[in-house]
Length: 335
Image (cartoon, rainbow, N blue to C red; front, side, top):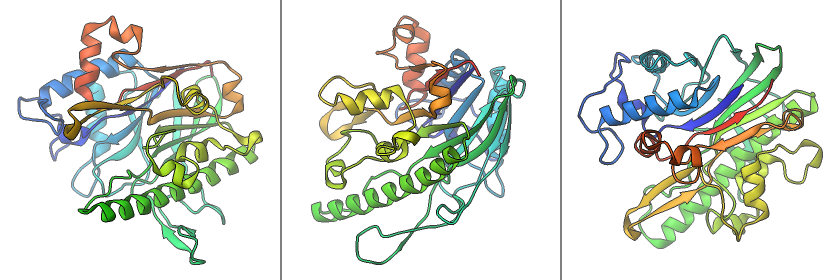
């Protein structure tokens, strides 16, 4: 089977209020890319992926007058994808949903949110002392993780969790001091979200359940100076560093954390306007528990320049650059 995670930048802007796909020459929400170009590019990328299940990050918006599930399924139908059914968990207010697009012949899924004394449901609030002032702060997810109970056609049962942690961008800050304070506060909140998610993961592992965590963690080893300030990245928290019996595995995260001075794998590419250059970062992951790691699956970052298969296919290479500022990550595994 092939599992994938893919952050599609402003997928929502490609659909009208009736959830119809827009493929005209008006501008998309991506810089200098039309809706027709982005739609065609996404069709090429999703078709090349040919995945049994894709955790779509920044999926089309769902609200009282808009059906994001119907939008994503219409997209799948337009390009005759095997992954043609959609599962949505808790809706959010950011116009960027988390949805699983999957092949119902290969996988059965149910939205199955959990809660416990230590880890409330992800649409609730989590109490934690963020700034060591003996006062418990209340933390919320702007994008509640998607929790699924899944069974493969072979009968393998697993817990799938799709996550998109909050960005650390210091919105609204103008002075250097304001930027610093906002950045530190946002990092605290993001780490609290990572802790909340890790508690849930640990509970599944303690119950001997098979776990796969997929998505954009908006964080990675060495990504910014605040990692040194706080000691750990969100990736290390979710991976379970310090808990050898319950550590999750992603080979790209392991490589990056072990060899920080060497070239790192990357899953996203952003243009830094002030510096007139591109920044590449490792933000997207597929973490698995020990039972899945033991099966020896193959992870792949569909990077247009770093992956030989993508580089040698000009149509796919160009499509990856037009479709999003992130690239898909896939895992091929026999389950």
